[in-house]
View 1 (cartoon, rainbow, N blue to C red):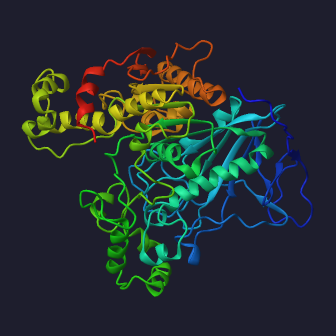
View 2: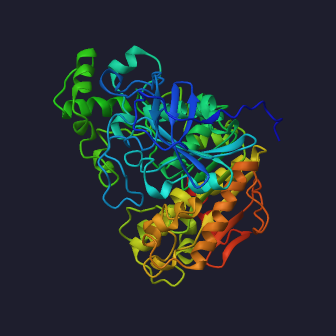
View 3: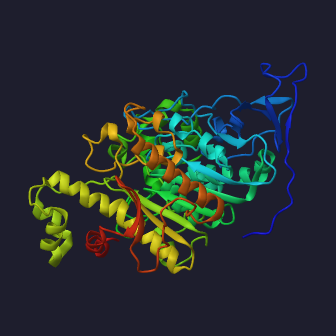
Length: 528
């Protein structure tokens, strides 16, 4: 445990003076002073809620494809009662977390939920959304931080740039020097620095910060754990379906070919410029790219189309400064930030295979192909597509979660693995296992706001009990670095060669040896 740090609770309730820049709220509206000025939120159910606080300048015009600049200071009181715009994107029509704002390039805003009256500094938990790095935002209802704040945490969520706004390499940018390419990760680091600097004003302890994220957000947590530029910005980390092996969105090098002839991110940037009718690689070409309307930068990319644009969109890249090596290499070397970690995946998580026959599907298992067939298709009645999805999920998400948990344990830090196997009662007949992202409303305890409960239709006591327990484990970990607490089944730590996990099942949370140990042992040798 850390020593108690000096703390001044800088929360005050004041009436607005005449001439305020925002509409007059009721007299109980909370106002806090942060580094860039005063912000006014709303008071609801014993909580203070602040939405749409700028943590950086709008990354528009000449600031498109620049590292985030600190937000300018303002006079008066900034109204923080509504979400800022989510970042520019083409929304994905079947997104499990639909946006509630109009996407815009001016999007670097964050949100805070905190208990109204705290007598001591509270632990902080910071959410990083998913969406394949091309979709997502902090505004979806399912991401409300109210229940984390209700349970004694200060909750923060924020937006980060997406698609080509978040990941873009071009010769003229590299020539200028400094940080280049991974602008989304620069935004994430800037938001965490904002938390360090300002969260005490909301009653949070800036030295007790937990980061957590799902899918691309989980991948981001992996990156932040393994990036030298994020060191010291958090004390705990939680990874939900974030992979961990270099087999999902494998990052290309910034400005040279990869070891197996992989295109560089710069090649993708040049190819995109040419597709927009912009030739050359110097300052004039960059200026022309910055003049393009935001919709042309999006160019139709979202989670449904991103793989169709592989030659004109790089995604995250090895830039040598933020991402020095792939995350798995850092974990294997034990060079990650040394903090307690929770990591896991869902029972029917994201995964796919390009195989069209069973022979192709099981060929990577080599001499153990027959054994793998019996493990993944024991009744010998599955289709290539269905069995391929199971193998793909084990390859991309489930075995990598075990890998990260083991590597963290090997480094001597507390490590806890989970599997989310629960399917909500309302959708159970349609889903044989827990799909990708379906754990989120249980973690947030926001089931009525989620498509994974059919938006509140037919929620049962069993559903609510799982949400109560899962949320409690996450709260406990954010407070102490240990998910265990009164009234909860015991969750054992992972060991360097272990298979211990907490399985969220139809019968409730079960601490057990991984029932899928055999299938993961088969997958492990085929990993990169």
